[in-house]
Length: 136
Image (cartoon, rainbow, N blue to C red):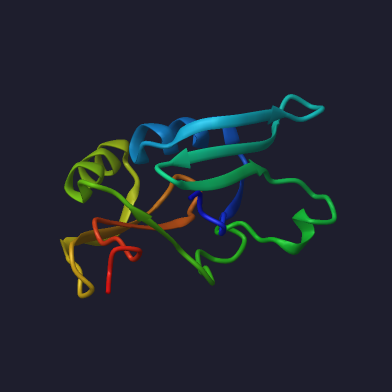
């Protein structure tokens, strides 16, 4: 069954972020809708049975309710947990991309291996092998 909770993120350079998320985290672009100015109005990326939706930051009614990580001084009120089969391999890819590692790879208290990083536009991702659906 697909996830019923789908995180949504906005980016300034959405085409570059689509490529980064697919290359480093293994997402697949399910749907990509261009906007009237050639920007990405809406994109759906899947990984296993999970999904994130992303779009280009805009100064519209909804966009005025959001701050980018840079506008918020790098502080965020949420992160995204990304369950992967091989956290060490994803960690190596993320390091190779030049992304900022905010928590080094290691054994996680809840089990498995995990690390945290910021994507190129500053959103915080926690990546690890722990599967919260499989935990008792």
